[in-house]
Image (cartoon, rainbow, N blue to C red; front, side):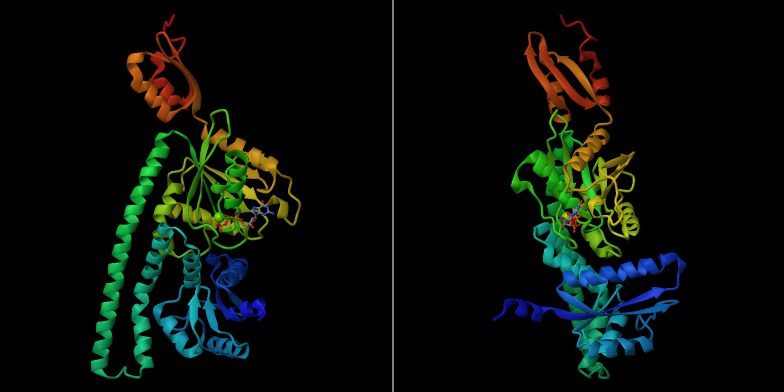
Length: 439
Ligand SMILES: Nc1nc2c(ncn2[C@@H]2O[C@H](COP(=O)(O)OP(=O)(O)OP(=O)(O)O)[C@@H](O)[C@H]2O)c(=O)[nH]1
Ligand SMILES: [Mg+2]
């Protein structure tokens, strides 16, 4: 049998539905168009084929049905005519909207949040990512249990009977408790994982090596930049991460030590990308993974400069970063994919804290590394010390907190040439060469 045909057979057809609010605060028609296009990409990432898009302009969302009653008719007609398997809405539906729409349309209903959760679930590989996604899914489910139970009871045609209603409520209570129990179990497990992560992070911080974190919208090119650095400076294929033209290719945080030579290394972390209307429960669940971002000395905000909606994507990233408490960390904006822009852009080019590059091109990478080093080592200075042998603890301190450029055991102490924080050089200034009689 033709395997392509088989694959096609598995693909579900979906009708996409969105509401454009007549609200000047929402960013207008462009924002809406982008949101619907993105919804289509999310559906494709879940192996669904968008067969139609139905939209409506409204003053406010219909509380019971999300869209207007007449529009529901239109969606049903389109979905039936095109033999769609399901209908997807571009917002997190309330429990009652979900239930009513399911009744009216007679097809499974999904919303943007469930699509994002599905993608995360299929991509999660490590234990931590799996725990985080399960926790987010249950947090999303909990308030929606009532609606789902009501729908089930009504389908059974027993809603009028007091006894069955009592039984239904008991079952609902039971399910709710089970879910709450699982959520607290997951929280405990995640706390354990995050403790391990904290130990690793403390070690890294103690090493005194500055840490830069790649952040930005999904598919902007974060992992591609990480891999380009690994190829150029780590030269170990095992250390490469997954880069792929799909939404949420990366879910786990990876940290690599980039050895640029001259004792000026930095750590680089690559993590999950952001998206418009990223469910709050996911941001919350991914908090421990995203701690790496919060603890970075420098953020590299990667932007897909070839995307017509890059400015909106930058806004979403900035919002998510401030939600995470990482809004105040020094940041370089990396306008990536300059090679794909429809209007030619000269690159690599640097303008202060903005840099225009293509992650696929070598000189871009060099300029990016130089920029990172300039920022990461802005308060690093060279220090030359002679540490007496009875002050071995100071040598240990420098080993942990600075980059040793040169070390030699002389007659009257250990000679150290280091790159260290200016504050550390000041702290041990009495042992600096030139400030002390050594000969
Ligand atoms: N032509 C070109 N393609 C690029 C460039 N940077 C990234 N890409 C491609 O864009 C796609 C997405 O890149 P990734 O590095 O996986 O994106 P990401 O930001 O890590 O995405 P998520 O992990 O989903 O958040 C891949 O197919 C890359 O090959 C670039 O500068 N030029
Ligand atoms: Mg990635």
